[in-house]
Image 1: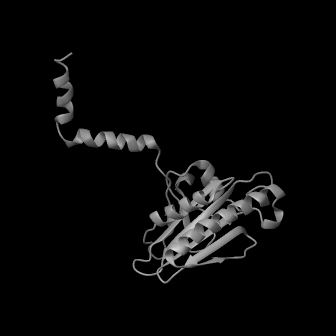
Image 2: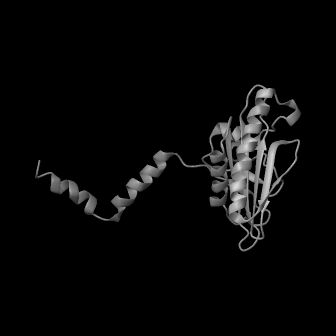
Length: 196
């Protein structure tokens, strides 16, 4: 089996489900997703400041979701993360984690979000974003993406993170569909030719 075809797993904050790096995730993000971040005690002052800004943004975004769903927002203490929050009711549970940076000289960190249905199909959705600074809107978008990505995960199977395909592939797909509908597309240029 070639080395390229082996699955790569992300360093997700929880042990279950395992999170596999799937298609259309760029090389930089893939590399950072597999790395261990530095601990909270090794962070420099600028890294701590950016981490606290992101933590406050996550608190605001999670508060909005908790208020809308009638949930209690719970901060979680951890030496591994700059910040972590959860909110749950009888039907759903939300989690968000803010990782520490990966190197002492840079400030890029990841916001992980997890959406879990506790009843019904018990879907799970996971999303992430790698950046040096986050606003509450950024964190809210990650949370909405996690909810949108929710899917049923069979027991023992990993959750597969999927990125967005490049726009050029989406455009070609859209252009190919009308041509396959029928002969009307070739007939239109033939009608225009006599007028020229």
